[in-house]
Length: 343
Length: 159
Image (cartoon, chains in turn brown, cyan):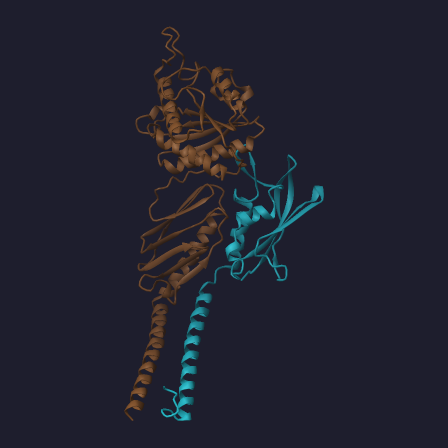
């Protein structure tokens, strides 16, 4: 009799637990709907999924700040899904809000946050950025050129011409450039080239990267033409009157047989620099008709290789507070961009 | 040993079975109701998503827009208008089976050249019905010329 009694008690206990679980679920769902929490979670999920789809419908860059209407939720955005759950229940939340968005093939969104005050959604180039605080520079370009594999590159650390910043000091005959800004530009581009030299020994250069040396445009052009490199990256420094402007421009030749490939390379380098330097105020790929330029224009080098880009980085007039002092980071960005281009 | 011969009479065993069945039924009923309620809440204007995605096809640099010297125009590039490009700009490879994700077929017609191209997203199912939008005039870049074409959008899974 005692054994049978114990069995009944155990079974009664199981019944009690099962009834309790079902009741708890029922009460939780009822409270969730009564408070509007279940509806709020669903609408937040819909809102954010539609926001991602909306950003993908824009041609340019967009920044949208999504204020969180209610505390206590956990947000995950990945695998094409926006999910909003209660912080305490996470995935076990029976009233979680879920909605699907459709990304592009290059977007792999991955965001999660507990109880954020706001969520920032941004479109920069072809990328979507989702974050709680925006540390990214969202001025990226949409690159739509044609990538092609390049294995060898020649770097041209430029230093202007008699029309620009720098002229050779013929009287001293030292080979050094003698104008203040010209020397500054020459020094910056040489330092970037030196960093590139230490990072990748497969690169070749149009002039010595260890010390200052003036090489005329013709000498540099000859060096480029005689090299077996697949592509040319010529590095220059921008000049803007407004010291707060720090643009990056990539000049490409419209006459090149591989204009689309050059355009893609320039665009990717700009985006990599923008991603690594929040100080950059904008980027632009500029096609130029090289044949119409003066004979001593530095952009003449663009016609020396089919795939060629002339970079104008930063602003010489804000040299003390801009990106031009960060040579190694610029060099790394350029090399990362080449890696991405080859992918 | 709850259902052991000595411990249980047949009536009690039936009682437990019915109880278990009822409990499972209540649980499933509740879960089904919660799910239905969630689906009801997701009642967004049916055309909103269709319009958003159509805008993506017409405006996103990832889709079919022609690029001229690095500048993205508002003109559809005939050569870029392909299944390959569409699958990149509307990437549903991982959610092909999800019936809530809209499927699209786009038909571009160049009347002046009597040309027609139709492309569809990876989740398009030829065996299912679809809704057809009104054709809209679009600019098309074809063989170095800018022409006027008609783009028709067909949608599946419209709710």
